[in-house]
Image (cartoon, rainbow, N blue to C red; front, side, top):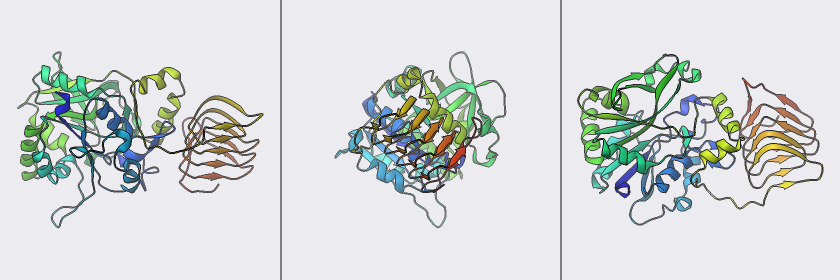
Length: 377
């Protein structure tokens, strides 16, 4: 049953929420948890669930994503039939580069029609989770649903509510009855308290998706949620699938910092990596700790060189901490250099940032300071 599913991943849908990290990359290629990218979680979950025909529909800033995914070898997706396909951005005289899923899907509708899988899984990449698509599809079948939508139960992040992206239809919440059927759907709700918050992960039969997308496009539709799902709620059976396992949702820079820091607790790390998460390999040496180094509660990827003191921090591959340097409550991305005697607290650095000797750089728990890619401080 699950082997009859086609996976489609949208890497750009939430780029606007973290503009500091997506000026030259997609949400999907944002580094996370020391050595991974956000797309690794959706992609690995699909592979772990037996889905081996996966398309990634890029919109912009996709070079970093292409470099990361390569041929798909690390995910065992280098195949003659199916495997990994990255669709580059497109535009026509009558339409700009796509905004929503309807516009994206209509341009590969011929490809979707030519596939043989019975089901299609649609997924974004702003949530890091180990998702069981086998159970998801089985739930869809058992309930004889037309569309099944995954959701979490949580308060709405204030960063999303205040993002003022109302015209983009950025987030969705549901009213769900006792049988799990979605009765109402809200776009950019401002409701307080716990809500049924969409994960933007959907299961639908392939032939039905083709019909819905074609009909919506002919009527000027752009967004799958607004122009298909919302309009069809009273005409088809739309089920809600509650996801109760560990997840990290990226909604702004503060949430990016917090979700990385949450992984310093063993129970969270074990929950997120309850199934294998695959990523691009980089042949680095093991992390080296020099004499006199003090390290407490640190996630350090391979290739790091630590000569200073580090506490409550996430270090990506190749980070170098100089003698006498102090790093506390920081997220330092790949190949960041902290020279001797520098003092960092509540800092996020992008790749290859450079903190020179003796510098004091401090943020706060509520406002971590961001140092951009290649920037020298």
